Image 1 (cartoon, rainbow, N blue to C red):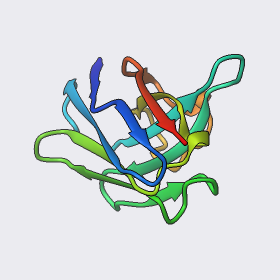
Image 2: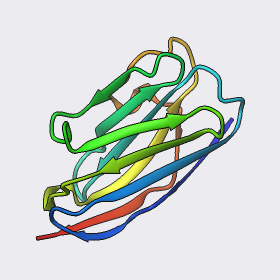
Image 3: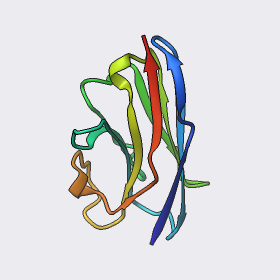
Length: 126
C-alpha cells in the first residue's frame, strides 16, 4: 500500500510559478512510476506529467511541455511538479498518482495508476 500526500497548491497570476510536491509513504519506493494529473469540473482527469524511478524516463502532456518540469528523489520518496509560465487554462485540481505493479512503464491514463493522492487546487488568474 502506498499513501500519497500532495501539497503546494494555491493561486497565482498568469505568468507566475507554483511548485507541487507529493510525498509517498508505505511500500518501499523501489521501481515505480509517479505522475501528475489534473481535473476541471465536468471533465475527465487528464494526464500532465510522469517520471519513472529507475531510469528517470519522463513524459509530458503537450499542453505543458516547456513550462512544467517533473522531478523526483527516491531517497525521501518525493515527486515535484514545477509549474512555470502558468496560464488560466492550467486552473484545475491537481492529483499525484503512483503505479507500483509491473510492468513499470510510462502510463498516461488513469487506469495506468494504482494509488492517488488528495487533490490540490491550482487557480491561475488572468
